[in-house]
Amino acid sequence: MSERGYQYDFSADNEAMHDLAGRQRKAATMLAILGEALGPRLATARLLTVGCSTGIIDEFLAPHVGSVTGIDIDAPAVEAARKRSRAPNATFRTGDAMNLDFADASFDIVICSQVYEHVPDPGRMMAEIRRVLAPDGVCYFAATNRFNIMEQHYDLPFLSVIPVPLAHLYLRMLGRGRYYHERHMTLGGLRRLTADFRVDDFTPKVIADPDRYNAGYMIGTGTKARVIRLFAKVAYWAFPGYLWLLWRDREAVRR
Image 1 (cartoon, rainbow, N blue to C red):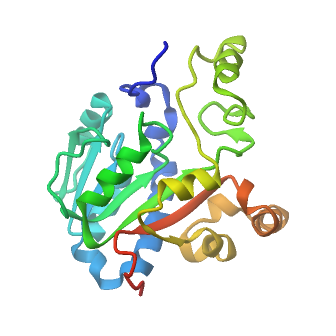
Image 2 (tube, rainbow, N blue to C red):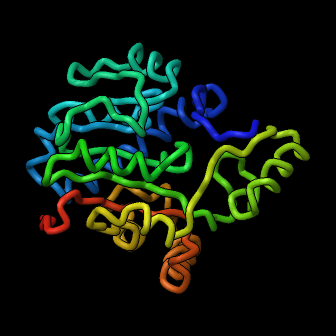
């Protein structure tokens, strides 16, 4: 495979997309952050999830917003979302994150969680997200750092850090695949990717008070939590991942 195209059947080989409890935990964190940022506006918000997969997160969020639209290039996952969902204000459709089939300013919120590394052109995706956001709209952006020691899709150390040709070879040698599709960015790369937005970095807030953001599953307790907090202070550039709100309007004032 010489060209990096779409991951049409990502959900078929990724059990996490079907993990009800795991996906709902992520959704609870999203809800806490968005609720703090938007206040009463959340209840009537038009929400788009880019990379909705099996729709578990969308169904969790649906009772708290005005409407939910989930899109994904993975047609079997979208069909699974349609069959699972009982939310009357949620719809799911096959769609391309780099060519969103919606009018300008169609949504108040866009969820883009752990998606950028999967698409062929993340810059084009972010431009599309900004286009479909209302002027005072916001994107919930969760992103893994390239310098994350344990690559989250294959649970292999340093897979995302080494050069791509070596990553392909790494997978083949261990019998875990033939092609490493994901392309993670460093903190600097992520900042360049989101340069057209005003970034409200919730990562330090979540680390400092995980209970407030339903994020105990991320931070842990005791020694683990203390190590994570120290790591974030002394080596933020190498922190495993980030939770950002991206405001379309650079001058927007957060509640």
